[in-house]
Length: 87
Image 1: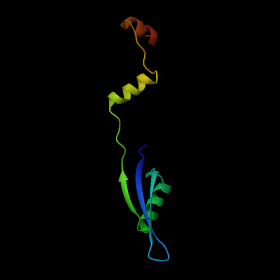
Image 2 (image 1 turned 90 degrees about the horizontal axis):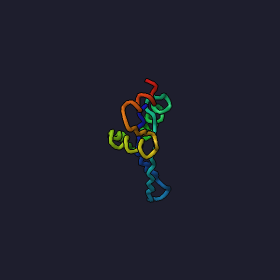
Image 3 (image 1 turned 120 degrees about the horizontal axis):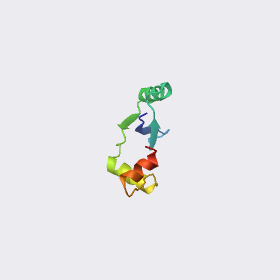
Image 4 (image 1 turned 180 degrees about the vertical axis):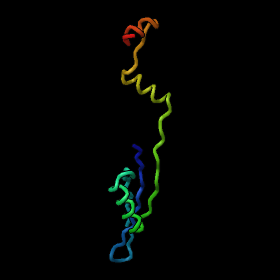
C-alpha cells in the first residue's frame, strides 16, 4: 500500500484586501474512494497541490534498522545456524 503525501496551499481571502495563506500537509491513500474523492474536491476548489512520493529506503539502511532493533542473530558456524532454523 503506497501512500502519497500531498502539500496543500490554501489561499483564503478576508473581507478587506488581506490575504491569508496556510500550508497543510496531508497524507492520503489515493487507492481508496474517500482519498480519491478528497483529492477531486480539493482540485475543484482550486487548491494548489504538490504530490510527493516518499522514497523507499535502501537495503543497507533497512539492514541497519534491523540491527538496531535486535532482529539480527549471529552464529559462529553454519551448523549452528541450521540447528537454530530447525533444518
